[in-house]
Length: 418
Image (cartoon, rainbow, N blue to C red; front, top):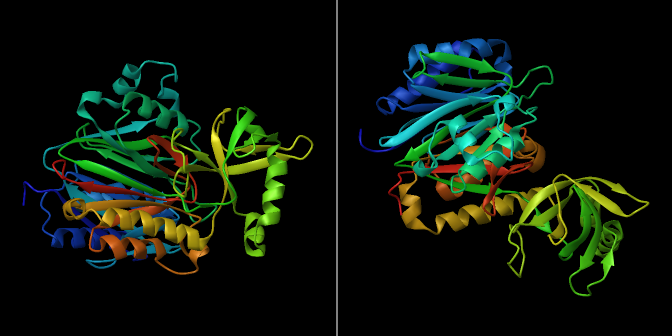
């Protein structure tokens, strides 16, 4: 088995950190996975006072050359050999380890003040990471939720490694008083062990590995698409009706749209209305999944303008969207169903990580283990670890973005997979 990729996950809900670490390590060792090459650890804020002890406790019981992880407001892991659970607002520790023969693993810890300027050459970014673009690396990223530079990092990595997948999430905590924390161990650098509250920890993976991504944004379009006729930075000042060619203030069009909605959707729009920005400029018929979903930050009734949570430019197509539990569930199901319909791919999957928004889980679905249950329906038995994030990182339409309210999946298999 040494020449085969292997993944295993274990989760513990023991209230004592020592007992939780012992339990997950024993479960991992029962699998006879051999000497793992990398580990991912996610820990709930119930253990916040013990965060400094986590990495030493793990490494005393299990040899891991590389380890990254973070705190989470909810923790995801395998409760049995076939299904995963989501533990929210309770003690939980999830450990995923993997044997990755033929895979180059480059760990890194970055602070935002070390980032090159966005107009720098790609070489500055590749020097920062320490991996050549010719290696075609994919990236797992875990960042603190208050990092002002995470969008710059994502944009810089897309610039330097345009073909690489970047996926991950922002650390979180379930208690206001518990600060988010990152964990990082690189045994190749004199056994360095880190616990950080700021910055980004990550891995660049290249060689005999394929990382595939699924980003379920969980929104459905309402009304019809419009073209941005006038805008500045993140403020939409005018929209053009695609059918009539008439330009109108976006707030006027939104008010007209609201009058056409059923009462249930009008009520939903009070708290769950979003803007979708089309990612494919050439696709004619746009539908669910063709948009990058962004928050509506505010409106200007005097000018009819709408501010959104992203930069916009004239010529882009947008459409208003709604988010609810049913749509979120359907979106994830459709994406996983599409993946399942590729049996040659499915047979090669060895493991997965789920980065799910704090706004999902029981607060959205009023049901436990909802997203992991959907994952089990389509990819049952695949070792799954992860956590609930303060923001999710993943690609949409060929570019990487920081999202909210999504479930983002990293799916791992050998590089030779079909």
